[in-house]
Amino acid sequence: MDAITCIKSRRSVRRFTDEAITKEQFTKIVDVAKMAPTWKNTQTIRYILVQDRGLIDRIAAEGLLGFEYNAKTLASCSGLVVLSQVTGICGYEKDGSFSTSKKDGWEMFDAGIAAQTFCLVAHEQGFGTCIQGVFDEDKVAEVLSLPEGQKVVALIPIGVPKFTPDPTPRKDTEELITFK
Image 1 (cartoon, helix red, strand yellow):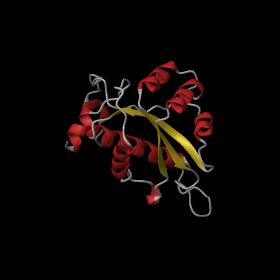
Image 2 (cartoon, one colour):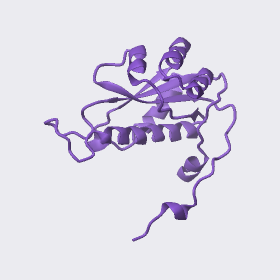
Image 3 (spheres, rainbow, N blue to C red):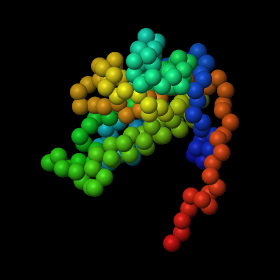
Image 4 (cartoon, rainbow, N blue to C red):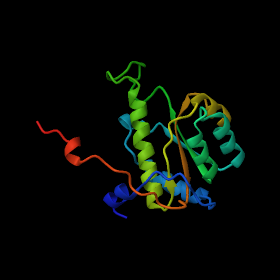
């Protein structure tokens, strides 16, 4: 699949078949997704594949701030990717000061690039994903015993799509462009 087709055909998937992603398939996706650019090539993003149904259900029950729409998606996925990040590096100088006025904002910038890259590679490999941002970071970290110095930046349910959702309307290109 070429890049333009991949970008234009990828959808947020919220309903999945029972087919599980294998460790080999997941590793193949991350092996490509790791090529996403990062602040000064710091490569602070980490990928945790949760396939234990008990852990997924616990995150859905305790870690989604009561957001039932996301809990319903987690109930259907065969795997949950918890995107985490080593903190205190991206956007910082070696002495601990911030490199730019964006301060630690570069952490989420890198996390967004990594999440989108991961989802595009997963799509190209036949898997559906949905980036979720409504969650209790501390609770998810606790449930997964996330190492100190890392934080949860996104939840990404993954699996074989039950169906491909229709595209959502997009603004006209002219509304998005300014020439000066």
